[in-house]
Image (spheres, helix red, strand yellow):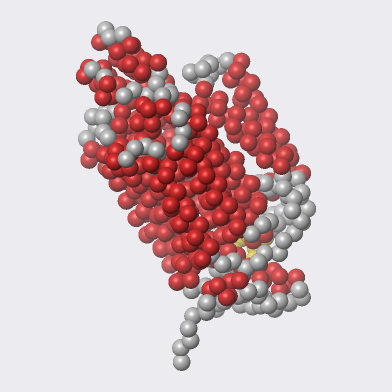
Length: 575
C-alpha cells in the first residue's frame, strides 16, 4: 500500500513535538519546489551586477563619465552588497528568514526602477547602491535557508545546481544585456529584472515554508555596522581615485588608508566585545573558516572582475557590439555551469569534496594566467579555450566554499557564519574590481598617449576620450581607433595577469583545508534535536538513512559568552 507524500506546507509550518528531535527529511521534489523561489532570487541578484556590464560603454557614451565612474557603477552594487551582507546574516539569526528574503527583493526592485530613470553617472551609481542593499540580502539569505532544509552531504548537488544558476547570471548576464541594449536600449536592462524580482516574490511566498524559530532578545550591532561600512567604503574610494585624482604616495592616500585600517581595527575590537556581533570573531579561530574566507576573496575577484573587464575588452579592444561581446563569453558560461553541476553531483554521491576544489582553483589560476597573454588581435579560438578554463575553475569552487564552511558552523550561528564568507567574497570582488579598474584606466591612458605620440596625433583626436572618458570607437579615425584597440587589449591583459597571484593564494588556501566529512543533518533537524535535548531528552533520534555508517564531523561550538574562545568539538553521527 502506498501513501501520498506529505504536504510540505503542512509539515514545514507545524512545530515538531518536543520529543521529535529529527523531523522527517524533505523529498527531492519538495526540496526543488522550495528552492525554486530562492534560485529565482539569486538569479535576479546576480543579473543586477552583470546584465549591465556589456552596456556600460553605451551608458557612458550617453551619460558621460570616465573610467572611475565606469568602475563604480559595478563597485557601488558590490560595496552596498558587501557592507549589508553581515547585517542581513545577523538578522537571519533573529527574525523570520522568509520575510527578510521578501524585504530584500522589494528593496532591490525599487533600486532597479530608480536606476532605469537615471540622468547622470552619479545618479546611476547611487541607484546601483540601493540595488546592492537588496542583493546583499538575497545572496546571504538564500544560502542560509538552504542550510535549513538540506544536509551538508546532500547539499553538494543542490549547491551545484545553484552554482549553475549563479554562473548563468554571472557570465550569461552580459549576453542578455547586450541583446536588450542593441534591441531596446540600456535603460531596459534595469526594467528587465523587475518582473523576475516580482516573480521570485510570488514563488517564495507559495513554495518556501520554514518552521517558526524561537526568537530571543533583539540586539543589533549598530556600531559594528557603521565601522565596517567606513572601513570598506574608504578603502574602495582610495583604490578608485588614487593615481588619477591624487598620487598613490600622497598625504591623501596616507589619510584614507590609515582611516580604513583604523576603522577595521576598531571593528574587530567592537566585535570581540559585542553581545550580538555582526561577524563573530570566535569563528575565525577555526581553520576551515579562515581558509575559506581567504579563498573566497580571490574567487570574488575572478568572478566579478572577469565579467566586467571581458566586456570592456570585447567592445574596446575588438570593436564588437554589446550583443556580440555577450555571445563571446558563452564558453565561460558553459564551463562554469557544467563544472558546477557535475562536481556538485559527485560531491553528494561520494562525500568527497577536496580534490575537486583543489583542481578547480588550479584551473582558475591557469585560466587567468592564459587570459593575461591576450592582445587586441588574439585569435578567438584561443579566447574560447582560456575563458572555458576560467569558467570551469569558478564553477568548481564558488559555491563549494560555502558548503565547506557551513559544514562546521553551529546551527544557531548559521546566518552570521555563512554571511561572513559571502561578505569576504563580495569584498574581494568590490576591492578587486576597483583596483583592476584603476589599473586598467592607468594602463590604457598611458598606452593611448604613447600611441598618439608615435602617430604625431594630438590628444584632441580622441574626442571625449582625450579627457580620460571611455572612448566611442565609432567616432574615431582609423589610425586612432587602432591605437585605442591596442591600448585596451594590452591593458585588459595586465588586469587578468594581476589577478593570478590571488588565484595562487586561493589554490594554497583550498589545499590546506581540513578534509572533513560532510554532515548528514539539516539545520531544521539540528535545531529540533537541540530543542529535544534541552527539554530533557537523553538521546536524539537516529538520522533517517544514516544507519549504514557513522560520520565524524568537526563543528564549531558556539561560545556561551561574547568573546569567549572555543576550540573545535567533534560530534559523532550514528553509524
